[in-house]
Every structure is written in structure tokens, then in C-alpha cells.
Length: 109
Image (cartoon, rainbow, N blue to C red; front, top):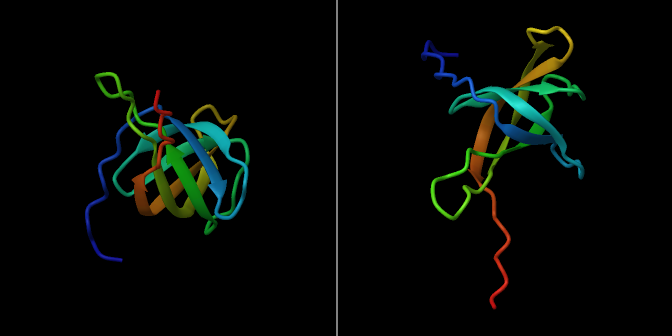
């Protein structure tokens, strides 16, 4: 790896869903911090380091009548540890790709 500076992390508590790539069900939790390259979140179900994952980040509501669409990220678990309270595990995921998730279209009246 190069000596590139570490991406700035933002201490944001956002709703997030995650699952191992190929799994059907999503697990819900909350982020500890987010950067342009990854996310750290609490987890009751710990996945092994190296596991490919999908992460659905729910962004803060945008001003106006429309909500921001969630961001669907793919990546890999790179680190597992305990959070500050020692009661939950936290997983660090490095993003390999991300895009805005498709939102269902409202039915026309």
C-alpha cells in the first residue's frame, strides 16, 4: 500500500443495513463513523474479516419534499473489534463501489 493519507472520518450516527454478499436478509444497525472509503458500524452478527458485504446507508433527510435515496455500497470487512462500551462488536468495511439505490416509483393518480 502507498502512503496516501487516511480518508477523513465523520462521526455520524446513521441508520444502516448490511448483509454478506448473496444473503437475502438484511441486518439493521447504526454507523459509528463514515468516510468516502468506508464505514464503521456496530454489529450483533459479526462477519469474518475478508467477507464481501453489501451496505445500505440511509442518508440524512434532504431539505424539501423528497428524501435522499439510500446509498448501496459493496465492500469487504477489513476489521472487527469491540466498541467503546465493550458490549457490541464493530465492523469496519472498506467500500469497493457505491451508488444510489433505486427507489420504487410512486403510482400515478
